[in-house]
Each structure stands twice: as structure tokens, then as C-alpha cells.
Image 1 (cartoon, rainbow, N blue to C red):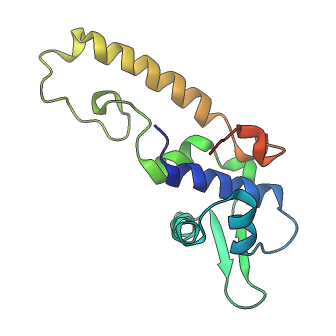
Image 2: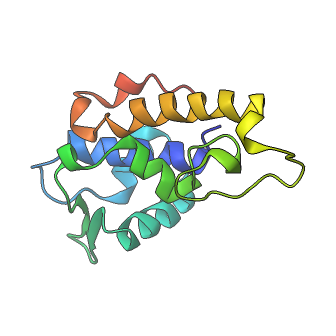
Length: 144
């Protein structure tokens, strides 16, 4: 399940994408425009800055902007940065593999085979969807 933090990170990045070329965007505009609690958004933007996705300028004329081209930022990578692996169980994760303690034989585990298909389908969609694919923030169809 997508965490609220990842959802808000996506919404904030899509807001910045939509407003790219308009200069620095103040945090209050993002928070108000996307209905994200300001304090939570501040923490998220710090994380996104640490990950090299946004940059900020302090002061009266400060704000946030994207560092990378939206065509280079995949939804899958954003979710991984915030929530960790896309895999529903650890034994099918590419980046965070961990054998299930109760597993007798990974090669014959039906649950593992099903969850690998889920992981592959999820990764295919999220890793080939970039911020540039959204003309409007509402395109993701997020609801509260």
C-alpha cells in the first residue's frame, strides 16, 4: 500500500512539474494547492532534497523547484525513495531481497511465484511512468 508520505511526495513533485518554468514555488502554495499538511510537507521536501530531486532557496523570495527533468523521474523511483521496495513480500524484491523465515522451498512456493508476478506488473507500470506523463496533477486520480 502506498503510504501517505509517498502519496504526498508524488503530489508535491507533480505540483512542481505542473508549475515548472514559473520560478521558485513556495511551500505554502504546494501545501494549499495539494491539501498537504505544511509540517508534513516540509519534512517530505527535505527528504526529496536529500535524494536530489528538488532544490530550495531560503528567504523571502525562496521556494522549491525540481532539479531533474520530469521526464527522468519515474514514479517507481519516488515510491522506492520514500516507502522502500515495491515488492509485496521480501523474497521477491530485487533491491531488498530477504528469504522468508517460514519458507521450505522458494522454487516451489506458489505464493512467491504469484507475488513475483505482482511485483513485476507493479514495477512495469511505475518504472515506466514519469512525472512528465502528467499534464495535470489530478491525472493520478488521488483522492483523500
